[in-house]
Image (spheres, rainbow, N blue to C red):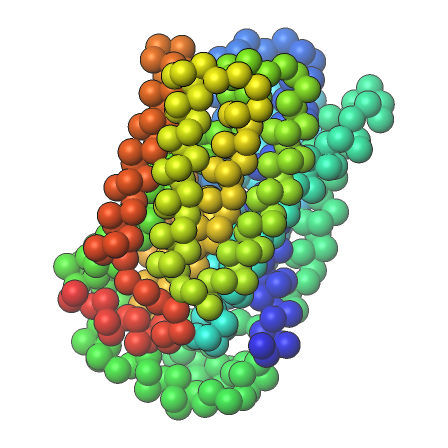
Amino acid sequence: MNSKILRISLIAALAGFLFGFDTVVISGAEKKLQLLWDSSDAFHGSVVIGMALWGTVVGAIFGGIPTDRIGRKNTLIWIGILYSVSAIGSAFANDPIMFAAARFIGGLGVGASTVAAPAYISEIAPAKDRGRLVGFYQFMLVFGILMAFVSNALLSNVGENDWRWMVGVEAFPAIIYTLFVVSVPKSPRWLLTKNRTEEARTVLATINPELTIEKLRADMNEGMDEHSASENIFMKKYRFPLMLAFFIAFFNQFSGINAFLYYAPRIFEAAGLGESTALLSSIGIGITNIIFTFAGIFLIDKLGRRQLMYIGSVGYIISLSLVASAFILQWEGMAVPIFLFLFIASHAIGQGAVIWVFISEVFPNHLRGSGQAFGSSTHWVLAAIIPSLVPFLFTEIGPGPVFAFFAFMMVLQLLFVRFFMPETKGVSLEELSKQFRNK
């Protein structure tokens, strides 16, 4: 693997670390904040905590605009600035509105990072290594989640205002990331879409001298002579990649993954376990996630995207069916945690490893930012809606039927993989664009 491209990809993937860290770090401080500001459950959930999630939705929906207009690199720099401002603002907030506003800014960074970082890495990566390199974004994401749990544990009870340290410590990796990402080159494919040929030639000669600018330009222009600035991803000729991006994001959330991550303690409690399972629902989940995400990244360019989705789908169906059975039949002991660890492993090696890689591959170069934004916003809108329904559904129909529904949705995912999902392993972005157009 090209060492320069590996280094650049790892720097860009650090946006994923901040994504995971920012999303989870609030878990250690949220109860203390509710007591400090005497917030009602509704206000605490929808404003103090929920504003970050809606910031993520906004960042994902509109993240394609700067990604396409000012470029992947410049967008990544602004993402680092958003994370830094959010962490510092959260740490120094003195009322819930200021805190929510600061968290909303961080959410913008999370949403935009799911657009810009995978798009950037996919465009600089050779076809044979693209899956692993884009997969580093997901690996950094789950590593960030684990580090947030560890950070919260280390900073808990360091003082009366320990929550300020918990949410503020993110500023250190955010500032370091921003300084690092300034040093990475612009995407040569993006430069060519802006007719900045000589700049693209210089970048390509530095990071991938085996590929000439003439060859890259010819591949990008083949079959694209008719395209104009007025094209968009919703045109009939792009309905196949649009469908692929929608369903990979749709099934990602209808696996129940975010519903589980947000409510793991509640789920374990419903299964009859006590507060001692907090460690299982944090550090243990994080370690399982990292191990199987790493396995997915290692295998994605060997076995391919479809094969990992097959493995993950079967694992989902088995684990979710077992969880549903455990609740319905009232199995005692460690059955539910064990089955849910199998669920996390299935997600990490399948959907977790594949989603951001696959969405970054299926759209043509001049529409990649908006295509990535469409897939990311589908993911984040569902990530906002589905977990919000879980407490109500658990109360009204019980956890068993909820997990049975998620298992059924994964049967539909298996059918999607079997009959609709193409294999993108080892194929250039330009060749994929030709294959999918008008399909």
